Length: 381
Image (cartoon, rainbow, N blue to C red; front, side, top):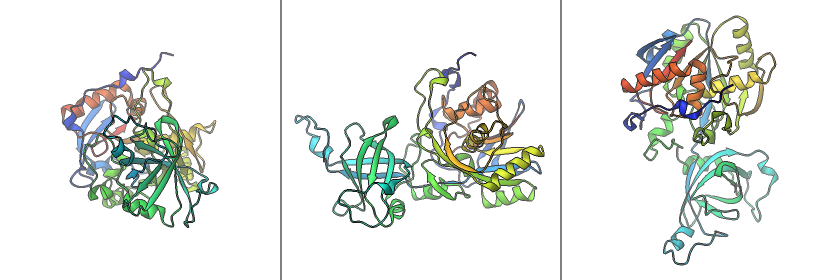
C-alpha cells in the first residue's frame, strides 16, 4: 500500500477567513451541504430538515473548562541564566502561562510535602510557557502575588513538551480554576478571551467537564434547533470524549502513517450503546456531530471483532485517514479544519480526499468562515 503524504492535505486559505469571533447568534452560521457530488450553500438553521425520521444523532457532551492560567514563578531551582542578560532577574520572577491539558488519575496517592491544606491534591499534564527554562522543582503561583490562590510544583517533564504539575491541595480547586482561569481559545484565534467566550465556546448540551477545546460542530446548536430535530422523529444520544492537547498539535512528519496521536479519555453509556446497536440493526443512519464523536464511536467499534459498541470507559488514540473503513458513522456534521491536520484527514477518509478538497476550494471561493468559530459542512455519502 502506498504511503499517505501530509502534503496531500494542504489547501490555500486567506488568513482573513479564519473566524476570530462566533457568529452573531447560534444557528446562524453558513452550512455547506455535500450530498454525493453535489454542493449546496445553506445555513445551519436548515440542518433539522436534512435529517431523516429514524436517524440517530450523536453528540459529544464534553464541557470545556477554563484551562489557561496566568501566574508567576519565583525562580526556585530555575535553570541559571547568563549574568550578562539584564532580563534575568525579571525572568526568574516573571509571568508564566500554563495550559492544563489533562488531569492524571490517582492524584490523591501522592502527598504534597509540608502541605496541611484540605482537599484533594491535583496532578496535571500541562503546557508551560516559557517552557524550556522551567524545570522540575520549579514552583508556580496563580492569583495575587502576595496571597496566591493556587500553587503548583513542576514534578517532571512529560511527552510532547509537556510538564507534570502537582497542585497543592485546596478545598475548591475547580471553583478557583473558574475564577482564575481563561477560556483556552485555539492559537489561530488571535485575541485574548472575553466573557462572551465563556458562553459561546461551549455547546448548549455540555455536561461532563474535562476538555481544553470545544467539540466545535456542536457550537451551532440551540435548544430550539434541538427541539425541531426531535419533532422530526430523530433520536439523539451522547458520548463523552475530553478533547486534549492533540487538537493543537501539528503533524511534524512527512508521512501520515508516522504521526502519533495523544490519547484522550472517553465514555460511552449503556443507553447510548443500546441506541447505536438498535439503529445499526434496523438500518437507520448514525449521524455524528463532529470529528470527536466520530473518533469515539469508531475507536469503540474497533475494539470488538464484529464492530459492536458496548458501554465502557477508556482511552482513545485512533488516527483516521484515507483508507480507513468506517464501521458506525453514516453521515457527518463538521466544521472546516486546518490544512494538513488530522481532523481534515478524518473528513477526507469519510468523504474522499478529492471531494473534500473541492468542497474546501468552494468554501474559500464563497468566503465561508473557517475553524472553531466558523461555518460548517454536512456530509452525506
